[in-house]
Length: 154
Image (cartoon, rainbow, N blue to C red; front, side, top):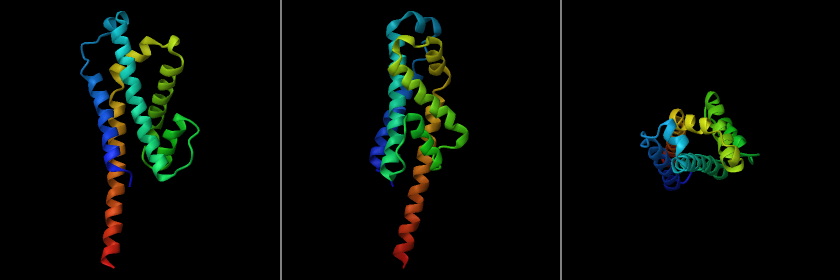
């Protein structure tokens, strides 16, 4: 089982970033478009949330010594191969990785409408990721408890 305390801290940080974005309900398109500080805030917190999500994924891959990912999109594919993320949600999470790369590597070409759309319409994707991670980790803990209990019974 992965380090529960470490995973809890990472999930808590991710939840914090998402909560901060969700509480910024006063940011509308006009404010976003016209105020560089607001734009920077949204971009940065989306970036932090995605980095934390990828860090959680990397922690699982590293801990369980699954195959080496070829990149961030592949990292999320590995979680799908291992049954953590359902196939039907893989594209959503891989799009996050692509969006992260756009934020980091092509800053001068950032599409404001895309960023604002993600900010307003896609934050629940982070909630889904956290729920899937916690569900899988909980099932692994149950399996570990069953295995430990059966060994103790013999």
